[in-house]
Image 1 (cartoon, rainbow, N blue to C red):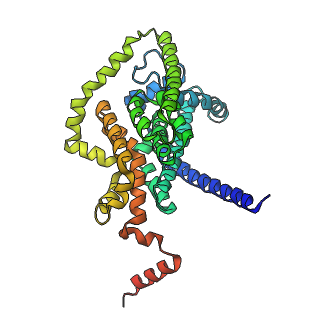
Image 2: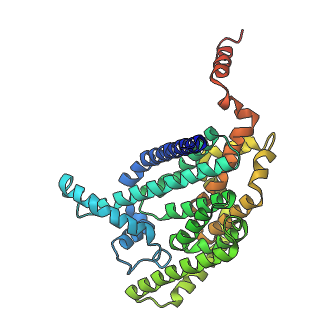
Image 3: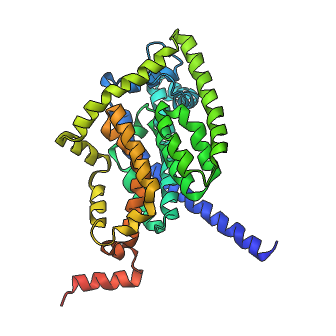
Length: 363
């Protein structure tokens, strides 16, 4: 083998090792924090979680039309639940016939999917010029959110939609046609509001995949999604116009969402998305804000606008606001990389040791 080819294989192998290490870190971070949510959550007041448990069991009748067609994560969870039930039958026979195996399957699937989104966040940070260490810390900051814990620990489908946004932002920057294609294939089946991300993809993702090819992929994915919806509607006897009526009903949330967004409670809900990690962005506004704002550019601003549309139409400001995680992660990582206040994080070991000794011995 030619030396340069061998070097390329070695570097590729190391790159995969690094990515695997980051992914394992993301899984460990989520699995530990979301476990308590999975075990102790009170399902009695959560219609969303009960709906997705019903979908995973193949029971569509009685499920709200808003959630009825989001079948990908519940279907995968149902497949994972079968071997889990066999284990439960041997260890906890009293639990095997309950929802516990299915709840555990959702916890496993959502943790792995959301960790995959975390890995994509990490890759996006590197593409925008952040250091590896800063990219890892940014991923940790985003996955430490209460909404990440909520998404990973409960029978929900948000993990897949967060992955769709992560792939869109990464694909547009990297020029990866595979990432854009995966985003288009998964998007319509993750949430119906994917339609609001489509214009962003067509405009900012054209370098990765020209818009005529995107339209072909969208047509195929949309046809599959329509087929799934038609089959489910046939199961429950729902009229086709019910979907349109439900979509129009979401417009009624606009006034409520705006009032809440401009209230003190709404400000607290926005702050709770990333918690005290917002303070890093405040530090970044002082001294060289252009170093992290300029790279995000129009694409980052436009994606935040798409997220804002989701927030206003859903009425769930914090949960939908978490879709801004790809942009937040990159901004966070760039500030840690370039801002003078955080340069001590990247000092060489000898320099860090000298600084520590100077701090301990000021005289």
